Length: 249
Ligand code: BTN
Image (cartoon, rainbow, N blue to C red; front, side, top):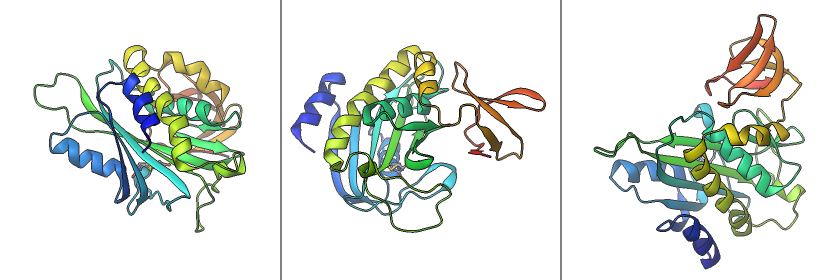
């Protein structure tokens, strides 16, 4: 990667290494392997191609060189409360990209009800003697061009529909510093400072939604922990678990 991004990120987090690979199975998987081998220094790992990119809920994330930006940020974090981290990252990515980018709880980036990208956060077991800190892997995938293939649960959106000349390294330059800033801000202050910013881009607000547990209701934003508020026949429900998927009904 270029020196500019190294310098910008290094100023935010001294010692952060920026590494770019032509191909890897998954940038998240690679950073998890490294963490398990005791490599816990902060790193931003970008891949031109992932052969086994992963999404949430065991889904695949496919991406071709030049057609998508795929990277993971890995660093030790010790927030007092972890809830809402992926939402905070989504806020940072959306704000950095374009006013048209919306957030679909918990961590998809949508434009016009189509999926521009997603976020997959994973944490490694705490290192021995490392206190409360966990090595945290923030993986982000963005479609720059329309991906090949069919059968997407949500039709894909390509960033180049909004920004025709968007290239991987310029977009990384635009997005990575705010993401790092958001992660460190979250570590200190939690999700609360991101709540209103999430609501300003909430793709589900006021819409009828169906949860994967079968219940339905109307989405009413998120609470101070990042739980989705859904008004159901049985009253207001706070959906906290990321294992529940939500779709506009
Ligand atoms: C989702 O939409 O379910 C999340 C997609 C996350 C994809 C990114 S691409 C970089 C990083 N490495 C992975 O294997 N996954 C994340």
